[in-house]
Every structure is written in C-alpha cells, then in structure tokens.
Amino acid sequence: MLTPEIQSKVDAYLAAGYDDASKAEIRALVASGDADAVNDAFYRTLEFGTGGLRGIMGAGLNRMNRYTLGAATQGLCNYLHKQFPEGKIRVAIAHDSRINSASFARVAANIFSASGIEVYLFEALRPTPELSFAIRHLGCQSGAVITASHNPKEYNGYKIYWQDGAQVTPPHDKAIIEEVNAIQSIEEIKFEGDDSRIHLIGAEVDDAYLQMLQGLSVKPEIVDEQGKHLKIIFTPIHGTGITLVPSALKRFGFQHVRIVEAQATPDGNFPTVHSPNPEEKPAMQMALDMALADDADLVLATDPDADRVGAGIKNEKGEWILLNGNQTAALLVYYLLTSWRDAGRLTGREYICNTIVTTDLINEMAAALGVPCHLTLTGFKYIAQVIREREQLGEVYICGGEESYGFLIGQQVRDKDAVAACCLIAELAAVMRAQGKTLQDALVAMYMQFGYRKEDLISLTKKGQRGTEEIKEMMRDLRANPPVSIGGSPVVTVLDYLTGESHDLTSGVKAKLEGFDPSDVLQFITADGTKVSARPSGTEPKIKFYFSVRADLASAAEYEQVGKALDAKIQGIMGEMGLK
Image 1 (tube, rainbow, N blue to C red):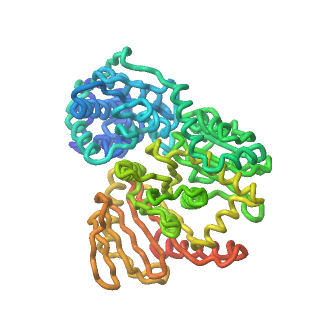
Image 2: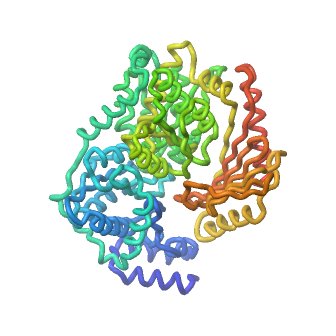
Image 3: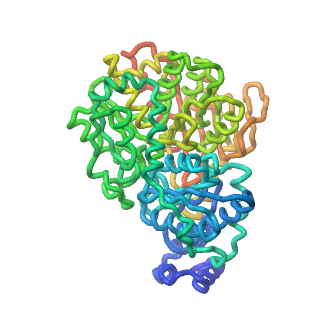
C-alpha cells in the first residue's frame, strides 16, 4: 500500500504531460507491488544541489531523466539571462560514456538553444576537465557535463559550471537552485531546440587542451630521454579517458603506452567491472594483470569522465600495488614543489590547495618548503574558488588534490583533471627511472623526510528515505556523544564544520573556523596526531569515515614493518568505533 502522499504524487505524474514511456514505466512499477521502489521514486523531487544533479536513471520525480534534467537546465537558462541581460550568452556541454549521456547532452543543448543561448556541444564524449578548459577557451558564461563520475551504471548526473570553468559556488549555486525550484510544471521547459544556435566542437579544442597540458611538464628533458623506455599500461575503464590520455602521454614523449583493449571501448554498462571506480582494485585488475605479463613500469587508470586517476606501481619485492588517492596526491605535491624549488621558480607568490579530509602530509610538506597551503572543504569547486580569489591578488596556483583520487595541476582547468595527472605521474616515474629508482623509492623518501602517514576510508551506503534519516542520526549521535579517546590516545581537538567551531578540549577554548561555508563534517584529532573525520556525501547516499595515523620512518628498511603497524592501528580504531 502506498501512503496517500505518495499516491497523490503518482496520480499527478500520470495526469501530467510526461511522455507515454515514462508513464508506462511508473504504471508497471506500481503494478509490481514494490511500494518501497515507488516511494523512492516519488518521496522527493531529485534535488538540484550546489553542484547539480545525480541520481538513478528512470521515470519519477526522484530520478535522473529528461524532465529533471530539463528543469535544471531551464532554471540555469533563466538565471543566465538575469546575470547577463545584455550581450551574447554561451555555454559548453560535454558528456561521458554512460547510458543516456549523449541523449541527455542533446536535451540540454536543445533547451539552452531554445532559450536564446549559443551552445558549444562536443561532437562525442570527452573528459570533464576538457569541458572546464573549453568554457574558458571559448569565452563561455557557463557549461555543463553529463556524468555520474565513478558511480554504478544505474546512475547519471548533471554538473554545471560558471564562466571561470569551475563548478558553481555561492552566490550563484543557491540562486540557480531558486530558479530551478521556481519551475512548477514541465510545460515551462523549452524542449524544442534551435539548431542554428548549436555548434559542434571537437578537434580544435582537443588540440588546445593538449598543448596546454604539455606546458605543465616540469622536466621535459628527462621525459625526452626516458620516455622511450618507460612501459605504461593504461585503462579508461570504458570511459572518456580513451579520447585524450593516450594522446597526452604521447605528446609528453612516452612511446610505450599499452591500452587494456577489453576496457578501451566506451560503454555505459561497464561490462568488465562491477563499479568503474579506480579507487577499487577489481576495476584495476585487468590493467595490473597486463602490467605483470608485460613487465611494465606503471599502471594508470581513469574513471568514466576522466577526472579521477588511479595508479599502480611495483613495491620493493617487485609486486604490483595500488596507490591510494592520498599517496598519489602527496607524491605529486612532493614532486612539483621540489621541482619548482630546484628550478628557482618559487618567488613567494605560489601556493597549493588541500581538502580537509585529505592527508595532512601535504600541508606539512608545503610548510616545510615555505609554500602556503590553503585548506578547503571537500570538492574541487572549493579549490577553484581559492584559485579565483588568489588569482586576483597575483598569486600562482601550483597544484592541489583530494583523497578521492582527484588532482589538479595549474590553473587553466578549474576541476580535477586525471588526464594531466596521468602525464605528471608518468613524468615522475621517468624522473625516478633516470636516477635508477622507482616510484616506490620516491614514496619511501617522502615518508622518511616528512613522516609516514597512512589513511583509510569506510563508506557506508544508506539508500532511500530511511537511509537519509539514518545518516542524519549518525551525525547527531557523534555530536551528542563524541569519542573521548581514539586508538588509545585522548581526543584533544574537535572540529565541527557545520557549526563552524573548533573546540580545544585540553584548554576548553572554542574558536571559529574561518574561511569555510557550513558543511556537515566532524573531525576528531588526538594527542598522537591521529585524525578521524565523518562526512555524509553530498552526491551519494553514503556517509564516509576517514582515518589518518602517523609514525616516524627512520630508514627504508623499516617501511614495511611501520606500514603494517599503522594499518593495524587503523583497523583497531575502526573496530573500536563499531565500523567493522
């Protein structure tokens, strides 16, 4: 039995002007007797959040479909006209390899064009970072990409960008949400496009983007020498990385790049993996197997929209291991900062960025090298916001990253960029090879100099309306009953980014967390430097717990032993918190 509220929403949906296929899908869902499924499709309208839409595809109010996408696009159109009442408005649109991505991109293009906006639509799938680049390159006022990043195949999404090539931030995000919410019926959405305003783009933007990437190299002379020897295995995991990563690596000078052919064809069903996420080892297994058979030097992978990068390297025993996002980000920061220092490029105007749930090792390295590190909330839109603000002061962004496998080098793109990250990881591997060393050696050297930090993550999925309530309850409980000790060490600091308050438990002093928008994140820091963070995801029905522990590393010989001790400590903390 459906509740009266849900039944009313279903009846209104079936009476409205939705297409016959959508109505038939809802009738079949109701007839199946699965009240939970009907409830999930109608208990809310798919929320247009501060970054756009993301949800399961299908008919219904709480689903990603042409109507929820249409309302989001029409709301953005209406806002753009208010922001730019005079002059030509341009938008760029890209899409990934997911099911319906190409058709959704066309729906968005039609709505923009019917609303009097010039549209620059990529002729075929392209990486998200190229969309960010294209907005600036083409002088657009906004842009959008159809993608659900690394989510399972049932999902799709819609991310929107402002004229600086970054995802929208205040005040634009909230103002756009108001415009979207103001749309009361699908009759207000202009689905009939104006083809004269839709311009296909492709090779010219590709070339400009690839030329820009080449300029990010800090030691091209070493790549020229070592690029003909380094053997790289690359997998796009059925996504957009295939369009640009091989070309980018070739332009850098890497001559031996083998592609995992079984995962090379773009396919929204992601047939060879359960989840197209380079954070998960099964998604990387084909590439690792090929690397072992080929005696390769490096494995690289990108997620479906090529904004997240995965990397595999050999350990001291010659076994293939995967770097996590914290390790990859820390290695790239270490390489770029020391290279800029050695080249005399640090003038005092440079800085890097890091997010609050990413390894503190990055902050510590920046401090040791005399480079400011700006902390942001999770999400590259906040890093892009820092870039926009510091750019006006004449400051230069070098790089920044986050633990969820995202990294950005240089300020010509304003979102995480796995294409660029692939090139710079390969460059670092070439630099180490020139010294007779490996990426594992670089990792150990970094830990010996700055301290060995290990991080891990638990992500709990809580689907549907009840799941959303459970996540809220978990955060309420943590605020009401915070841990007094973690891993045997007393908690000395609690950071609550929702209230914007830092609480020093030793002195009892409370202070304001400056420079952060309110965000539902809690962090607990202990006397021995352990940090545990709790954060509900803003785009998925999940709550994530982040763990970070540290120890000194006196010699390379102790690396494995100290690493195992840190792993054991994290596992103990997880058990202590009831998360295992």
